[in-house]
Image 1 (cartoon, rainbow, N blue to C red):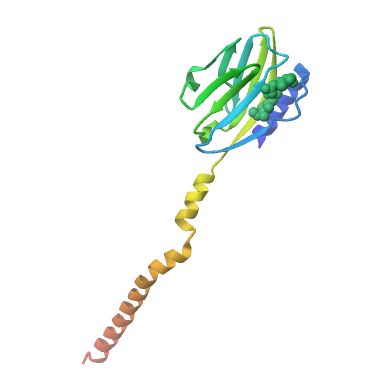
Image 2 (image 1 turned 45 degrees about the vertical axis):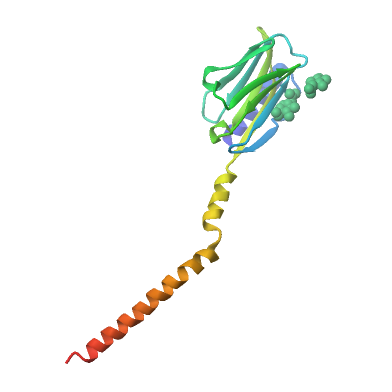
Length: 176
Ligand SMILES: *[C@@H]1O[C@H](CO)[C@@H](O)[C@H](O)[C@H]1NC(C)=O
Ligand SMILES: *[C@@H]1O[C@H](CO)[C@@H](O)[C@H](O)[C@H]1NC(C)=O
């Protein structure tokens, strides 16, 4: 939450500096294992340079990819099969496949010329862990089945217990 506020403040400051009319960061939601495509339309800022940044709560901003005209490349630590960058016309895309919890962050793009870079777009990527919830439900959700399965054991133990008490009572009664 605090990170969201900080991100908002930073982006508000960025908005004022670059006098861009950003409303607020769009939210993209994805589940673990899914694919998200973040886009950045640089029309009006197409002066050659381009950057994708990742900002996650409590961490230093990371450069995900950088480009020079039509050539855009991932930085070393993002050169893993899950990440891909594309440029079609004036629109850059950052594709994240098989999403993991650590991908949850604010991603923003910057474009322009060496001495005049502007932040064009920012996206908050939220990663839902509903697959964990689903597996929990599968394991513990159907309580009736669990009770039915345990029924005979409980009855068996109960009968055994009653027999034990009877045997003890008989032994005590016929002790002498
Ligand atoms: C900003 O990013 C969002 C999410 O990726 C996308 O829907 C929107 O079109 C983008 N806007 C621009 C100006 O690139
Ligand atoms: C990119 O933005 C420009 C100007 O706002 C718009 O005319 C164009 O259709 C946009 N391109 C895409 C692919 O959305």
